[in-house]
Image (cartoon, rainbow, N blue to C red; front, side, top):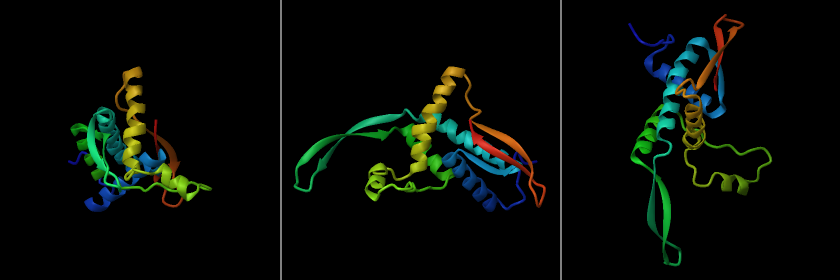
Length: 170
């Protein structure tokens, strides 16, 4: 007996569907889907957010020597991920798709480049810089770890009568 719903799909297709919906949930904050898919997405999303909450503070300051165009060497302090955060980052990158940052309406190209400079994986940065601190604070104040997502049942879908649900971040 399996411990999860197979969603009537082969493993590769099922994993792809769940991966895409987890990515959309973490990027946009909510996704409308069937109830069975929402439960499958909830399992993966909760584990990803828990990983971020437990490791987002693991950073190391490193001093690097940087050479300019003119050949002048200078020392620069850089903040790198610690071993726990780096491992968590790699695990999360294996479970979600890479979403590129979009230009906002009426945003100039130079403003967009300045805003996204140095960010190569915006979703991963959002998970560690937004969700990690937010849910860590929630864990400390309420004493509740987990329960980062909520499933709201909408009702049957017109056409095939599948039970539709909205999964959203709390």
